[in-house]
Length: 173
Image (cartoon, rainbow, N blue to C red; front, side, top):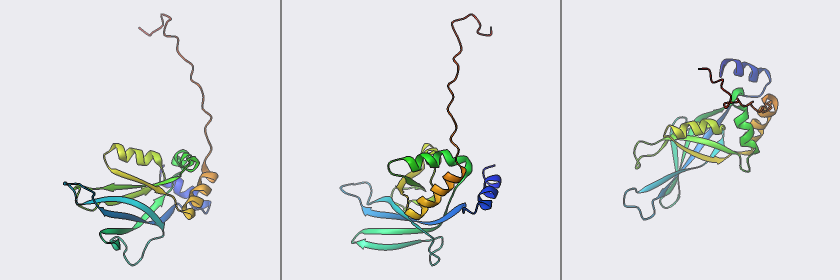
């Protein structure tokens, strides 16, 4: 159901189900480390994809040894069954976009492979030992996810479970 039914519903409501983004990674010299030369971090995302460097990283030097690496070609997708996670992300004090990366060696550049707005999805990748960076959501993307959640999210009323009386002799044996 994750792709077929939700894709059809989203397209019928004229809210795009994907949003192109470019991931911005920063490389800085490691401070006082004898094991690594550089430290990598995700510093943000920009809306849209660069057509000039599709699928490859573009590098800009900022100040001496500090570099920005732009990874284009990513689509952030929204799924109806993740609306609860999107809603709680939007209601947090600082809504975040999550960038998942793989890095086999501390010296090599980490490779982003997924951008998501779902905390639950990011947490699942963290448990699988991938690296996850959280960055602020750009305003255009915030409005997009907000309209998606307003259209599709219906919070479920929490129900209290009835407790079983384990003290009575009915344990099923």
